[in-house]
Image 1 (cartoon, one colour):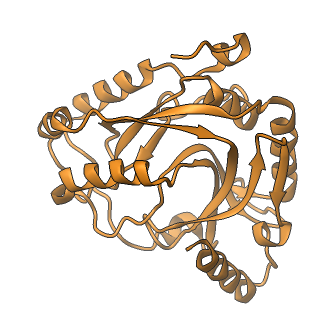
Image 2 (tube, helix red, strand yellow):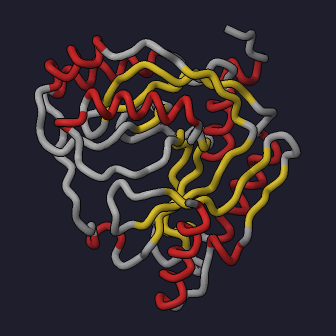
Length: 259
């Protein structure tokens, strides 16, 4: 494992989070059932949800995800199409004029970009592999071998803690389609491949998904380049016109361009 600098070491995500996730999963006894429907009570007509993530949609990572999905095919919800990524921070519903606590507006983006300029640091390595699970979804563990994930989390989120337990970097394999015994699933995890993939994060992506499509694909709205420490994005794509008739075609075009 490479030697971390002092600042990165202080902020690095510890490997112990994966053991904690395993213990919580085992103690739960059964998985949570996901359903395919439009969660209108959550999005209230807002068509997109935004997040910061590291895009790891690489052939080697896709292969690990596909292998894990085949192992768990009979317990997963059908038609999960989200590309491999490591979520770093949830933003909210993009809105040019935020009206709800979970809206994400231009001022919030500006604050995050300012923090990234000051704190983000240089490109860094990740290690992806090792099948584990939350109660809602199985995942591939992502080890923060150089502390870069922790540094980005600090820039985007500050000292805030996660409501459901410690932040656990991961690549989601899929969503559970029913309530399944966790003990039997842990036995399957123990038979999964121990292969890992090493990759380098050179940018952080602002991404979004359609709120009416559970497990639907991600679209990229912009990047923060860790090499040149600059933002590459278009405000008109992130915060489209307020007229809903303009918002939805805009999002469809983004998804088309991302294919």
